[in-house]
Image (cartoon, rainbow, N blue to C red; front, top):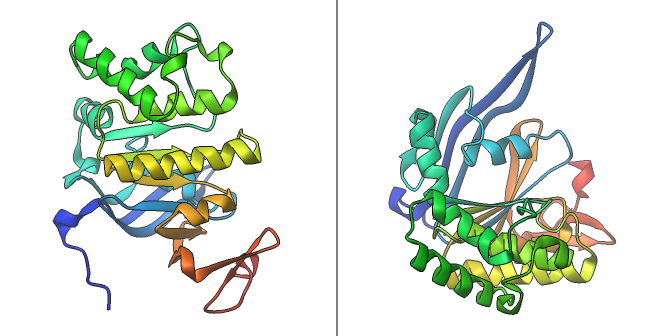
Length: 257
């Protein structure tokens, strides 16, 4: 029987998180009491249909939006209690972000894009350039350090974005549809790279995705439906059949659940 992790063993804790939006007299419950725990060094995928609340959960964990109620801990810090300045400090130093659209600065080289988060964190110039170059080496792009985003392929741009996410040695990296704009072959390369970075850097990765290929990279999959955690599974408990997922315990297809 698997032991319950201690507080010190957890990178992310979400307790009874609710996020309500009030629109024209109606209440939209994007999150309606979510509880999730993610261990340090774990690779977790958040999956679910459109409108399920997974993007809201991603934003709440990333400190991009505050929950209406509930608590969110990153590295033992309750971020729901932080003010704007404290939250900005934590996001800069504790969380790395990977976006579907890469979000690279077009007038900057690959090296400059990777050093940018370190500038905000106050890392000395000599150290940040050395660290950025080593990160580009890790993602196989040291020979493209002086190239701007328009001179790189989509896969190369996402590799730069991954290097940038690890620039400040974060505790957790949040990846939002990291393969969404990539072809099958390049998407697989990016998934394998994220697995490698997860293991080499011992950084927790939380991936918000629709991509079934990421199932195989995940230690666990958190399924979100109607603003709640529907279930949490290991990759061995999920069977992929012709583009669909079947739960090996119940035998039902994902869309039936």
